[in-house]
Amino acid sequence: MEKHSKFLAFIFIGWFVFSLVLPASAQDLSEEDKIWDTFTAWIKTSPEEASFEAYGKKLSEDGLPQSEIQRQLDMIRKILTENPEKGVELTYDSIFSKPLTGDPEKDGFTSTPSVYLVESIKELTPGKALDVGAGQGRNSVWLAQQGWDVTAIDISGAGLAAASANAEKAGVHISTVKTSYENYDFGVEQWDLIVMILSWAPVADPDFVAKLNDSLRPGGKVVFEHVLETPKQKFPKVVQALPPNALLEHFSGFFIRYYEEGVWLGDWGGPPADLVRMIAKKK
Image (cartoon, rainbow, N blue to C red):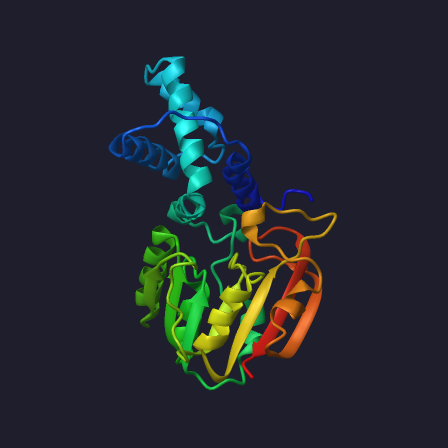
């Protein structure tokens, strides 16, 4: 598919390294941490054209010999390959650390609540809500303003720091948890609402969906929106894009209150894209 925006372009660049598994000699963990920390500190303040090539050039300007530059790049690729969550965290920390302009096309995402979410829950009585992949909290803050008790989870510490700051500016409170989906304890009958708007969640995993189901209170709902994988619209595997109609199978244990696949304007500010939207209710 055509490049939607600098947001998706950055994602593609960041995750391209997952197909490049290069050998690296065993290293002391502290040295590996130092190389990773130096790389992440650079990329969080780097220009938009940040890439491995640009980082290699930066190391060369610092006076490192080519052999050492290659060794460090190989180690970074190895870290990203063996620890996918580091790649996700790095990507989003970089995106969420940059100053916002208020223009979704320039920022790579919108800072206003999802119109789809707003319409989906307008008849619901506020209760406890979980915002999965909350980012800078645009949906979490809006939910809190409507009276919901909100917990926002994300792997990006920079995103959650911004979410907390945005909540404070709005005069509301949200709880934040920095975590991966794999490590988060969704609990049992904890939530009246789970929001999953472009969250990159592994909904094709039956165990993950079972966690969602168990964590909902009776009658609780999941409001879901994500990109579709089509012949003309491709994404890296980590994005967890869904084939057409696959979501219905994944949530077959729920009552499906609303389901639609169509072309809508994506929240990243780019041109219209193939998306799937669903409201599922716990049986």
